[in-house]
Length: 328
Length: 276
Image (tube, rainbow over all chains, first blue to last red; front, side, top):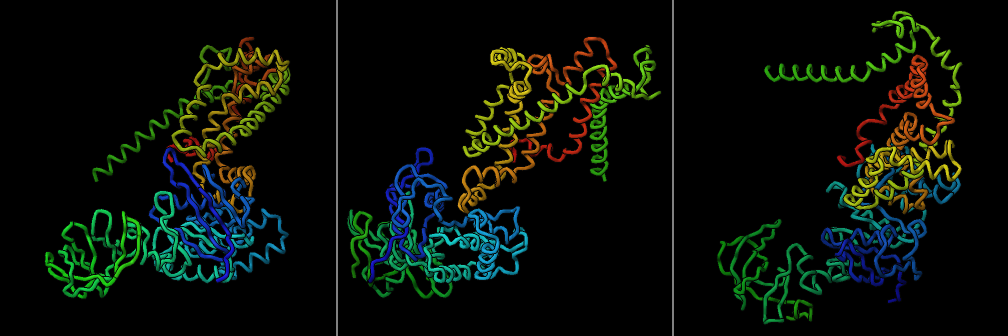
């Protein structure tokens, strides 16, 4: 594998809100041409992190490097990083065309160039027919495209997107994800986007950084986040159900996903608390002898309170809550 | 049925009170206009002057405008009022922008402190300021008067602008910065036009405050007076008719401006965004 070029690097970024460090000595490397997702529960400073990268917020300490250059003290207009805000932030006093043209006008492009760039961006995003509409008269999906078009006209060195899908209808959301991936491939540019919904990361990103307590708990592909969560918190956060843990000793515990266990008179057992039907698969929420909740998978509901024996085909070994190795 | 009648009664009472209050405000103005447009034979010379116009004349205006220096004070008033509007906006816009960046609580607290100048009687501030202006050789200068009057217009203007800036979504400002605008350009070409109603309200209220202002004007600028001071001089000298004519001249632009620009001076721009 060839050595990938680092596009953006964060070193020791810390940001306080009052006395609380929302971002705490955070490090990150994002590579050229990557579609990188920042995933975390709400209120963990994901948007703040994007604002630090783009230059709207100043970090209390730490540095931001773009293409190897320290840009920590540059104002946003000198950074050439595009950002699409969660609200899309279209200028209400301008029509679609003038919204897209705005960054070019600021950069003093001549009229003919602006027109060419605006029209090609609009064509790329399929919004040519709404160019003369008012921004209040177009749909949520179109608003997002306008915001994206406005971000890409000036050929920025990278893109930041804050919760890009949260303001879209559930129906459009699925296709919007695929379109974002296609757009990123086409532009061959670096994208970072923020989301609190893991379904928005699983199939389109190269890597996902899971943010909590001001730090990346783990930066990895989604598969690895699911299969090898580096600590109990990531195990809990990723997946439809939190990872199940069985305590083995004071410091050692085993973690597993529902599909890693088979229900055939195994050496382990637990008491059924609730049946949960998810599509055609049934999940059993069970309680073990030690009192921890685990999730098992079976084909039909069983009586609450019944004993279920199972064995683990594979499991992760955690020492003091941190991933050690996988056992079988 | 019953609720309908109650609502009707409520409405009638409400309108009655509103009309009463309106009369309370309009009546003195009506008398002022009546006196200034009527010959003295039907007003000053009568023991019980008529409340309705009997005879109309422009003589009062003609004598007031010819016997006294009218043009000088008019231009002085206009000059000072526009200066006050400009100085106020020049200072209040950046001040309000700064306050809008703070968290709401801190911003509101500082705003309250800014109003302290308005709580103190004008004289207490006017006398030491006049001393300083005399020392600086700015006695009777329009700029000195405008600066002094701005002391009182600034807090209110800042309050109005703070409210307007707060209603602009933060993302729009951030977007303008990301799209390549510097901070000053963002404030003056993005935020100010978006807050234009608030800017207009702040300018007009400052303009009107200065136009009506008396205390500073009489202390700082007695030799080349403004219109309110001329009215005062006429009253003290006993030429009540001329005073009324001048007073009418002073009030008319205020009334016209208030009516024409009413939509900008409506409550929402004056709440400072606190209820919004």
